[in-house]
Amino acid sequence: MYEERIPVNILGQTYEILGDPAEALYYNSLARFVEEKMREIQNATHIVSSQKIAVLAALNIADELFQDRDDKSFSSKSSEKKYENIMNLLDSALEKESHEK
Image (cartoon, rainbow, N blue to C red):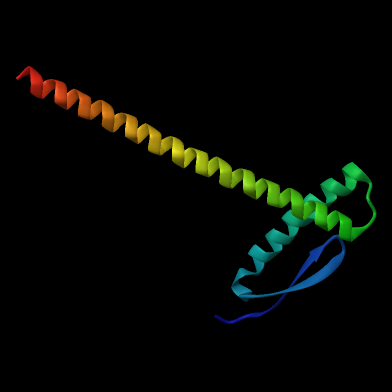
């Protein structure tokens, strides 16, 4: 995989990300997402320090990630439970049918 420095802009600062040039649009989308989070925090808190804003944005993004993981985990466990219930109902129905014969 060929890598080069890809410039992205966040809050007026240019950062260089080492990556595949074919993925430049993706990296810029990530940078826009981070910038949006940072601007939300900046507007809500009126904090001036870019470092503090960046840390708070990182915490918010991590929180979203953890919540998404928890939701997926819950959904997966819920699906497993539904599958078990369906299998139990099927087993009961088949057992009942075999006893009626």
